[in-house]
Length: 66
Image (cartoon, rainbow, N blue to C red; front, top):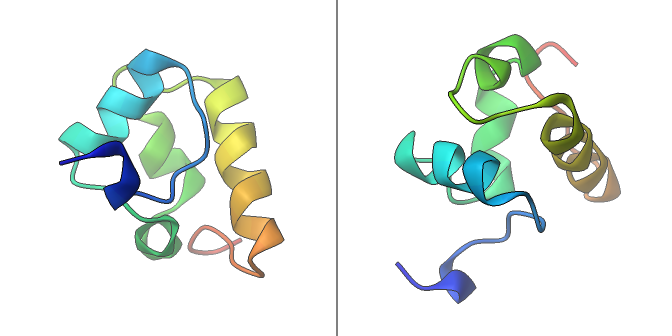
């Protein structure tokens, strides 16, 4: 999958790999999971979660339950 096939924000490589390995390639997909579920992914940290939250908010979206 090419870099242009995702709308995920710029993240540290481990966090990006964790999301892609779990099948998350679009921000909209993250509205179906909670922040806690995303944090359980190996390689995901607080800075990456903050970046995802901000990117979702910019589009009027949020994590499930958020």
